[in-house]
Length: 627
Ligand code: COA
Ligand code: AMP
Image 1 (cartoon, rainbow, N blue to C red):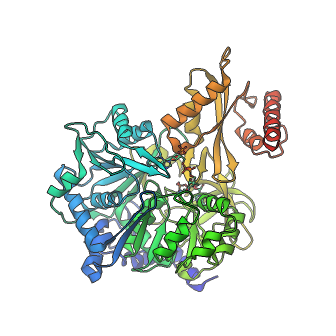
Image 2: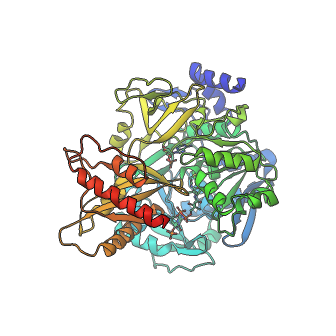
Image 3: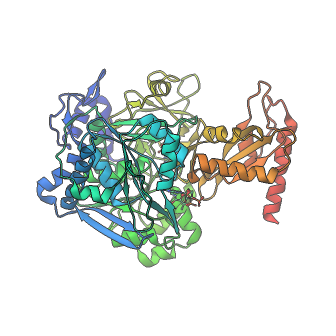
């Protein structure tokens, strides 16, 4: 174990106040906080700062204006662009002027539904500059999901682009935005549209404004100091129902935690090149494409493409090599996709990895086989680490920046300084070492973690109720004899499909609304590429004959209502669902059957025939697959 890690971890618990006030010195404050934690007010409560100033202005003022701030690599459009901190400052302060000119001010919400282009990152920083609260919505969500977020966040403005590019497909965004605004009860003042050359979008007179035209007329505006506890953004994430949870991130704790993590978890300094191959619509994109690397004065890489097919399985290595990436972060799915196309890693052997120091994985469980393959081929540390949208930055990791090199495939590492973990049984009692239980984190959560859910105090409170004094992560796992923490899966309806967090409960709600369905269950089943995929079991109403048609309709409805990202492609129409005597659907049994795992008839089952028939169905499917 690294002594630096051990000392930092101990101090973060024994002298939390000193530890976090020291960490806060990495941030430029308009008024420095006098205290780190205040039981009533939260982290750094009397501090004043501006997150955009910390991510952009201060680097220019420190004489680093000509350093590269952002590289946009877009294999899907065949373009590559670099911008310096000087240029970023100009663009952000002018875009902030554009927003201010449209009446957006401190505390106003701005929804951003945009692809992986420079304007998206600039727009986020522009909101931060004037104290507006952005809410970025991932492009893979359909219009009804966007509408839900608009109704909850009640934005003054919606920013969008004419299209996203998904592999070889151009995905028009504007029709989707128009549809979402028809569905939403809340009306936005204006839609500001960035026209991309790949697709022109129609404008609605009066409501829609052209981004480029507005920008030419806009003046630049300075940073507005905000309280450390003022929200920087709302990011919606899947909960266990159809209503997404709006995770609120505060400015101060977020800036401090990200600055600390860049140096001590990822081990990077100003000038290093950091690439998180995620999407700005997810928390990884917020923390480690936009804010973390820029606060640290690094060059951040914004990648518009896929690990495979844009154009081939060498695209990640080419991007790493060409841009001299120091630290790379991706989801295990991406590595599985590359391995499937290039099992011998011949692209990697040919291209190399330039000055890459380590690769970090997160977003879903990293299976040991994938980790081992990647380490063997990369000849670099492959570090699995664990966190959630709610937390905003890693909670389990090997702190590479503190010299901690301990890794064990299958484990997400050790508690990061600031986080105190426990593994509890259903009664809140610590389980013995090695036993699986609920993964919980002692309160208070460290800086950067969520402090509320937008408009939803009841759901927020629920995460702290089951185990008093602890935050319930919703994950299950165990700690091994050497202290490695292993995260094995969720204890609720959430599944991770290709690193995307989705709710099977939400999909069930959509399937159940089909008029020909009497009841249904959606479960997450193992998938060799995506880690997990959703699978629906639907019982038709009496007299419904067109089963194949029904499957197609169910797939289409989930795609239309939730979005293509749900990736629901498997639906089984069955006569009955297995249930307990009290009427609870035996979802765990369905999952096991679908995974081909051996299963004993649950003692509480009311209708064993239903489960037997589904089991037979899967035996037949397996047989047909192999034939
Ligand atoms: N805008 C519009 N559509 C989107 C989208 C976006 N931003 N993101 C995904 N989609 C669509 C895809 O086009 C696909 O549509 P299709 O069903 O018409 O093909 C669907 O949503 C599912 O997308 P995805 O899960 O990405 O699957 P894929 O087959 O296109 O790609 C992988 C598979 C493994 C290559 C890809 O999922 C991947 O790169 N995963 C890593 C994810 C990641 O980094 N997650 C962040 C967590 S750190
Ligand atoms: P998200 O909020 O989208 O980041 O998803 C968080 C969830 O993804 C966690 O609660 C876990 O279930 C899962 N997850 C993220 N990282 C890991 C990891 N390294 N190992 C196992 N599960 C992970």
